[in-house]
Amino acid sequence: MASNFLGYFSNDIGIDLGTANTLVYVKDKGIVLREPSVVAIDTVTRKVRAVGADAKRMLGRTPGNITAIRPMKDGVIADFDVTEAMLRYFIDKVRANSFVPPRVVIAIPSGITAVEKRAVMDSAVHAGARKVITIPEPMAAAIGVGLPIDEPAANMIVDIGGGTTEIAIISLSGMVICKSIRVAGDELDTAIVNYMKRAYNLMIGERTAEEIKIRVGSAYPLDEELTMEVKGRDSVAGLPKTIHITSQEIREALSDPISAIVDIVRATLEQCPPELSADLVDRGFVMAGGGALIRGIDRLLSDKTGLPVTVADDPLSAVANGTGIFLNEINWVLQNV
Ligand code: ADP
Ligand code: MG
Image (cartoon, rainbow, N blue to C red):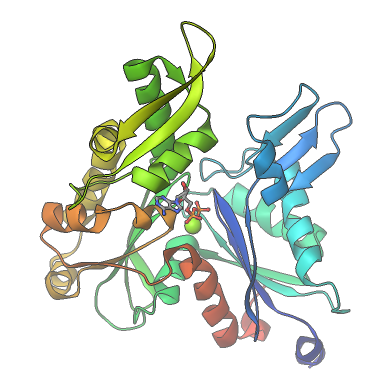
């Protein structure tokens, strides 16, 4: 009873604790916050200098006494204190005028260990949550894109985030198969950094590589190929330099990590029980996460699997929207936390 009473006043929230971006969904309001999962720390005092977009701007541009950290970078928690500081900052930001501590649903990478999961839950409690439950990220993504996961049929989701690609086949609200690899958006950025160094002796930062990926990156030949001007530092002369690149060469640069993603999708399908495989022939799978926006990735995956592939309407919001739908359905009293 007490719990229901407090529930009436509190803002229940859903958090997509992503490797690249954290989104917060407030019940009855929708997504109210989306910021990079980055924290800038003073290396001497260990104080937090900035969180989110402000901290991301500092990546690669920090003086010796500040370091910008992505605590969830590889889908595992690199630094618990920093993760907690980040969660606290985001929770404080959205609960400004609510006097009752919120109940929180957190979507976490599926590859996380039980110890890390516990640590995230503890962090959320320290950060001001009254009750916390977690939901695996691919499950939240599947709910968020509107798949009928409670049916006795295969619902498949491929979520390409920053640090990890997560794939799940869900039936009767349970994950029948779930796979996660540490090849996703960040690996694509690294492949571009390496290519620029190899082909042009041009040193570029991660942020520039990401911009190249978003502006001209692709996984399948484009009807009209694109070009872009790139600035960086010449590794031989040591001076700033500008070059011109094409989408063909960037596609070539991205081919290894893209192949790794194709391989894991195929490996998942190979392990699928036959009845569910049969469902997938017609139903295909849905793509979510920022990586689903790489030009032609849906077409490539459809070619390589023979299945229909759909990209979610708003792939970057799928997981957060899934936590939001979950918030409406959850019976907190039955949750033993
Ligand atoms: P996470 O859930 O791991 O936080 P997101 O789903 O937020 O990750 O996706 C972030 C990744 O998507 C980053 O690597 C980013 O560069 C990439 N991304 C975002 N928009 C695009 C785009 N238009 N084209 C290609 N990649 C994109
Ligand atoms: Mg994600």
